[in-house]
Image 1: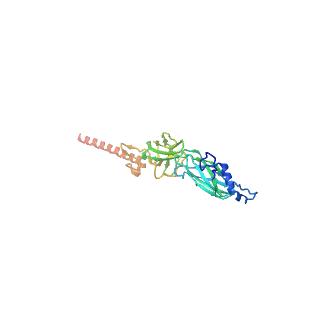
Image 2 (image 1 turned 60 degrees about the horizontal axis):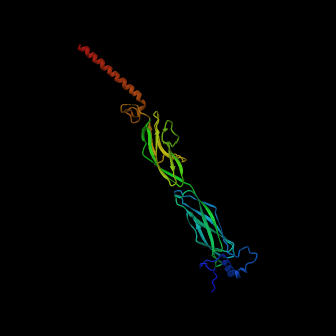
Image 3 (image 1 turned 30 degrees about the vertical axis):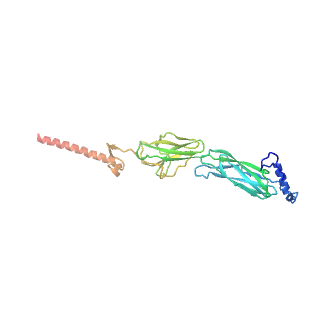
Length: 329
């Protein structure tokens, strides 16, 4: 058999012109059956058209995947076997190796794109290629191919969690509420966020109470690509002239976060601030735990009565002593 390959050509490598000639010779008898007015091409053909852009969310809890939708059009008069090749670059993905497309039809193609959680935010290019390997059962390598590019956007994300340390409890007016918070952030881009302390009273009101002074250093967290951890200190000075008992909690809130309608059951600092008590030495004369108990409102009257009785008793003792001296004399 005569060698049809050009001198020096490696086995299996055939020029496009040679493939076209061979294909026309083999398909010639079938081609005569096609009306001249037919819009279908005699030669194999393939066209690839994909979505221009897809977005992938790689934040914690997300699927970190997206679907690229493409259309493969076979405008020829032959059923075609088409090989699919996708270059994902820095991303990952999946795609079918090949598809079969009927003559003169369009077929949908779906390609999965995925990324790691630490994938840097930005735009990435994915190339989708299709090559016809056979038409009408006849091998046609290199005769018809097409490709399209898809822009895949990795969306930016920054998420932070925090844990509040110990602190709070029962305080007297004028004392400082002091505690710390440990903050941990994940991000796929350079970003910044801030945290602040918020007071919520036992009625659910988040209006900052009069006289309470937030003396906390600014809690600003600089987050590099990949995330970071930070500790922040919080200090709130309670008013020394507080006239009522304030009871509630302190929460730590990220800028832009919503204030809860009541004190959460965890990750908070519960506090109770009571007015300063009047006392002699270490004896408290006011408050529910004082020596007067529930009669603390009448404490001034009681104290005045006791003082009067003591004065009268002293005067009586002095008078009695003086009388005894007079009798002795």
